[in-house]
Structure formats: structure tokens, C-alpha cells
Image (cartoon, rainbow over all chains, first blue to last red; front, side):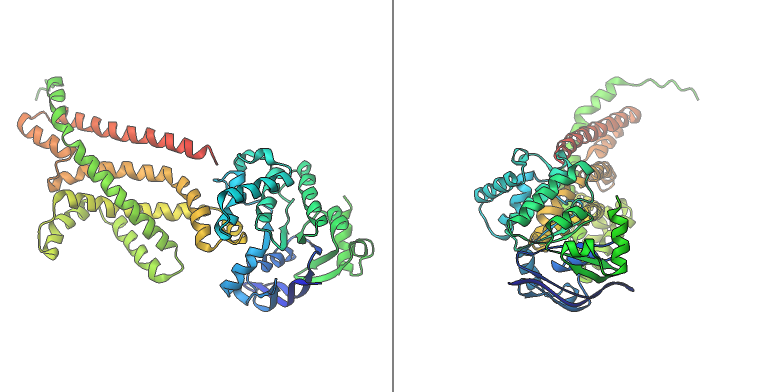
Length: 248
Length: 223
């Protein structure tokens, strides 16, 4: 199995605040890794390091065979990684001045020099796949949150990434829209996409994850198969976290 | 002192054909200056956002100087002062356009900076995460959105600059106010003529602001 992400003794600070402490983490091709933890535990920062949205201070980070230097240096590696790694944000971050279709076409046209009609074809196929082909000509603001997030997933997929990062993709959604986004992610996982997902959706984690990682205070406190982590957590911090989030 | 003032409609309307001759100058100085000012504003506004101090500092200095001194002094300096250095007279029209360009450029620079900074950081993150370079992200994601937000303050600046051109009567450009002054010199109907001058400025600025409202509505419909 090919490793897509390899972090070794990764340390990250925000000023004096030590956000990530000696993180060792590997993600294999085709694997779905779900990262859970309380807010402020460093889980979002962790996946934002993978595509260089956050730099780190020490340790080693290799993504898709590209070594990403500390402090976000090495622009070439960064550019190469970002072409291969898609990201979906909590706030969708769609481009409000472009239609849904144009949102998806932009990166293939600018980064891969795909011609316009081919990019439009890809966009329509992806919109169909996430179930909103009929919204292609609308602007993001005209869509519901769930639809916007599905567009954001399609937009990332248009670059044919080898790895998808999801940073709390359902946290900004109304409860009735969470399901439609998780469905798309579930499909994606089934098709073999390598995924790193930060989420509070424990049901999704249990069902879809190959591996669950619990982060507390910037450290990986527990990791393993979902059943093992959820049903038989070894660390008492994991136990108390799960007892709080699984109650409701 | 009795005040037997009577508004002289004949004088008011009689001045109009004469005043209208000033309007092309007023518009040429305003829009010529604003066009150049917009270019200056974009360049210095982006420079003031740069991480590079060699770009940021000169831009900031320019903005401070031209926002911090009166435009009347600026145009007097250009028209009467600069010829001492360049070694020849400067055409009054050129001086007027240059003054509007440099003055509005400083304000537009701040409009550009504010517009760009108002765009959510998540937009840049989304752009670079898709593999776009920093400059691709800026020009295809950030700038179009910033430009849309800049329309109201830019319109505001255009109106201010149009009114500022009235000061250039002091250097003898035959713009609206200057035309009025010349007319009054022979007819002594100051009230009527300045009243018409004011109405003509109002006509220009009202046209512009309704045009801008239209553009703004169209621009916002898609966001």
C-alpha cells in the first residue's frame, strides 16, 4: 500500500500556544481516516497542515511523495501537493461571483489548462454525481447550505485529487441538510477515495472510517478501528469525550 | 439698505449657453483625472497591501501626502510651482487633470485596499487549495469580488472629484465656475449665475449617482 501522507514528530505553534505535539500519522492510499476531538484540540490545524494552509515548526511532513518544508516554505512542493489534494471547508468557501458550474470549472481551466468545453463537461458530470445538476447556472447564494457544500465537494473533485481533506464539512449546516452531504462523502469513500475527515458526526465516523483518531490537547491520544475506539476506548480522555458526545 | 432683490430669470437662463461651454472642461478634468487616478489607486492600493516594504512604504507615503494636503494647494503647486523645475509652463488643463488624478488616486488607493481586505480569508484558502497560484487566486477570485464592493466608494470619490474641479477656476481653466465668473463680470448677476452653476453640478452628480445605483443593483444581483 502506498502512503499518501506521512507525518513524523510534527510540531506546530501559534505564538506560545503549542497546537500540535509530536504528531505521528500515516495515511494509506484508499484509507478513510476520521479525526475526532473537542474544539480547540488541534484537529482542524492538523489537516490544514497537510495541504500547507498552516505551516509547522518542526518534524517531517511528506504528502504524495512531496516533502513539505516547515513554515510553508518550498513553493514548488506546495503547488504540487495542492494539485493532488482537495479540501472541503466548514464554511464551503464557494466563489460567490461565479455560478455553480463556473466554480467547478475554474481550477481545471487555470491549473490544468483544460479547455472550456471539457471543463464544463467535467463540471456537469460532477454536479450530476452530487445530485444537483439542475442548479448549475445558479449562484452559490441561491443554494441551500447542503447544496453549497455538495458543490464545494464537486469543485474539489474536479481536480481529480488523490486525497480529500474535509474540515468539519457539516458543522455549519442545518440539521436536515447534514445527511445529504454525508451521503456524498459516503459514496466517495465507497469508490475508494483517500479521505481525512475532521467531524463531529460520530455515526458517520463509525460507519465509514477505516481508522478513527482521537486528538486531545494537540496529541493523538487514541487511534484504531472505529469499533475499537467507540466501543472500547483505552484512554480515559477518549472515554470521557465519547461519553459526552455519544449521549445525545 | 433696501433689499429690492428680484430673481432675474432672463439673466439666469441667459447664462446657460455660456455655462454649458464649461461643462466639457469640467467633465474632461473629472473623468480624465479619475481614470488616471483609478490606475494610480489600483497600483498604489495593491502596493500598500504588499508584504514587500519597498512597495508598501512609497505607496503609504504617497497616500498620506495627497490625502493630507488640500487639492487647491496641489493644483497651485503643479500649475505655478512645477514650471520652475520642469523649465516650462504647464497647461492649465493638464495641471487640473494631474491634480485630480493624484488626489483621487490617493483616496482610491484606500478604497482598493479596503475592498481587497474585506474579502473573507476563506476565499483565498479555497483558491490556493484548488491549486491556483497566489496571483491566480487574487485575480480570478479576490479581485472580482473586491471590485464589486468598491463600486459605492468609487462613485462617492467620483462625485467628490467632480466638485473639486470647481477649484480649478483659480488657474484659469474654462470650466463651469470659471465660465460663470466671466459671465458675472459683465452682467453683475451673481445670484442667478451661481444658482445655475450649482444646478448644473447637481445635474451631473445626480446623473452619475443614479447610474451608479443601477450598476450596483446589477452587480449585487449575482452575489
